[in-house]
Image (tube, rainbow, N blue to C red; front, side, top):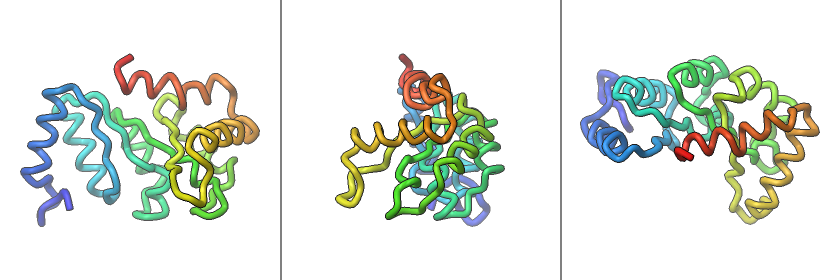
Length: 161
C-alpha cells in the first residue's frame, strides 16, 4: 500500500518519485487503488514529473471503483489515462465498444492512450489484438485522427519523441 494511516505517501514512494524525476522517466500507477492514484498523481504533479500514466483506467473501474469523474480529475492533473482494449473482449469485463469510446471522448482523446493488456492464452496475440481493437474503435465511431492520438501521438509524447 502506498499510503500511510494518514493518507500520505510512504517515504519509499517519495524516493521512487525522486528517481523518476531525476531520470526524466514515465511514472505509471500500476495496480493501485483509486485513492492511491489520486494522491500519487497529485504528488507527481507537485514535484514537476511531467509524464504520468494512470494504468488500466477503465479496468480499474471494475477493480477499485474508479469513476469517470476520477479519470477526468486525474487527466486534469496532467496524467494520461490508459484504456486497455481487453475490456471489450468476451472473457474479461466486457464493455461495449461504444461505451469505451464514450468514456475516452468524455475524458478527451488528448488525455488518453490505449494498450491491449493481452498476453493471456484466452486473448489474441498482442499485435493482432491491437489491430482488432483499433478496427473496433473505428467501427464504434471514433475518427482516424482520434485513434491516431490514442495509439501514436500521445504515446510518442509520453516517450519524449
